[in-house]
Image 1 (cartoon, rainbow, N blue to C red):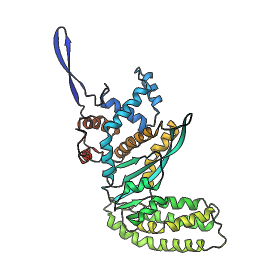
Image 2 (cartoon, rainbow, N blue to C red; image 1 turned 120 degrees about the vertical axis):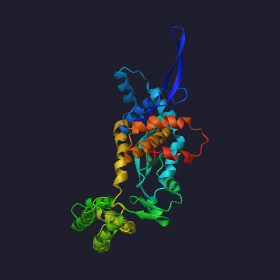
Image 3 (cartoon, rainbow, N blue to C red; image 1 turned 30 degrees about the vertical axis):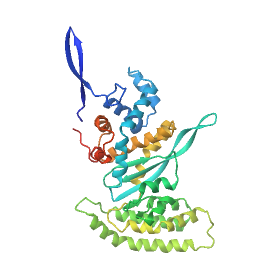
Image 4 (cartoon, one colour; image 1 turned 180 degrees about the horizontal axis):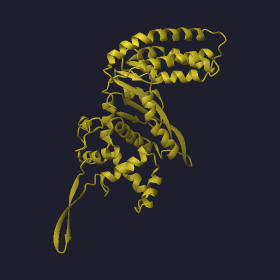
Length: 365
């Protein structure tokens, strides 16, 4: 368990001045300590409970708190964690292997005469090796500039589905496809024997790759690369030949499931082959898709974020929560400790000074 910071408190008892210690309150104008705030964040972003339900839970257990106070604590915590969140965005790109995706959430926005909900997109980029996760949100935009501006001049490896902004990254970095996305396109062609043949070949790649696990029984990434060079070329060659035959079929209807599957895979072909150029690349983007289940659960339970600012706040908290998960760090303990530490750091402190407070390097003291 992390040690809790305390502040000295003086009081008078029976005419004598006494000194005691009370937990530090990291937020200005608030008497709540870091562990209480961490509990609200855990319920909201790990267990996907709406703030209204959290407040009701507290009330049922004899603690009165209104919804505005709970929202206020999360807003103030976002301010305290601002530089920590910036450090996360930079630290993710220290890794030479990233995986990315985008998902949606309903967001309340102002419209003439009141408010309405709209679909807003949250982007996520995960550092595969350091286990740091960076969610970011720009007024719900899914425009390519959002992800391309973040990636900037990053020169490592990026794995994703075939969304066009990701494909554009192939000009400046090594891009990997997601074989699960490719496979789903062909699974949609249920009664097409040739399409199911492609599914069988993709399954064959997985079956061969699962015969060994890097880090187990002395199996290394280099050994895995040699193994991939042995089994993959033949299957890829057969796959490409089938794809070319299907693409040349004059009876294939444009915009049919078969057409979409074939041309999606052809567009992803270079990124598919790239997977097999190293022994430690994943065959798919399932790591990121598992993380996005937190957003999916929030969609079901909370229905919408109350504003663009609320969605940005959620992106920050999900970044910390998912990074804790991938690094086997208890999110409650992490927030309880780090909120006190960041509250004491001077605002003009360089962002790099926050690096050792991120979940992959943080240690409970």
